[in-house]
Length: 278
Ligand code: SAM
Picture (cartoon, helix red, strand yellow):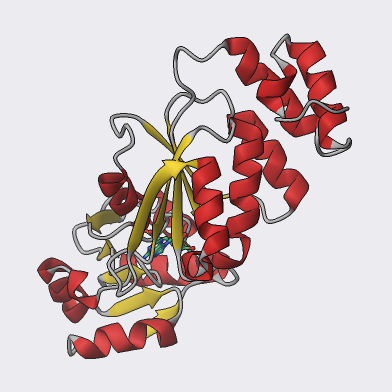
């Protein structure tokens, strides 16, 4: 049960690049709470310093969240207000904070958002892909086999797909996406949003792959990758063929995988893998 004397947990979004994107309310809340729980206190120090926020910060990251959440909830119960921030954007969105929010809510603490930047939403808002419905997939698995399996599972998804990706994997991921969804699928690479080298490229997956291969700068920095959903009119057999192909490609040479996937799904082999051999 909520008690009147308990403090409040404020979940505060911080900028994803451009420090001017910290809202006036975020500044006010961060300046007046008893404590800031930050993913990395050193990372957040320049932001806090820029706005003259002198509130004490403690670290709350994936390795200590379980223990720290309990300690913070005790302080909230004792009447202190606490703000939760992550390194960038909205806490809990591919960032720590879930355990703390859940523990606070379980303890009857009021949890309030101070909304602001989120890379996924910022990218979606400029991508020009259908945005009335979308699926946020966050980071794909780092290991190639698991990543391909996940993409194969998503091949039939008709809503716009939103992924986070790191610079050292973006090329591999684009290749895997082309294999799973077909190279003609529309996609958007949203890089370094709100920063100096902000670039948003919309094309099909084949073109994106070529652009990134031709210009190494396009694989530097931070990325959101968006992929249009499977067109409603796309042949269901083709979608199934792509899914099976992406799975078989893990174990077999591509041409052989395409031949089997075509036989299993009834999709044309050339639509799965653009080669006549095998
Ligand atoms: N909580 C954050 C949010 O609300 O966007 C996301 C944190 S997640 C650990 C970091 C990932 O978000 C990066 O690897 C990248 O995929 C994406 N990202 C963060 N800032 C970005 C930016 N300025 N431009 C493009 N993508 C960004």
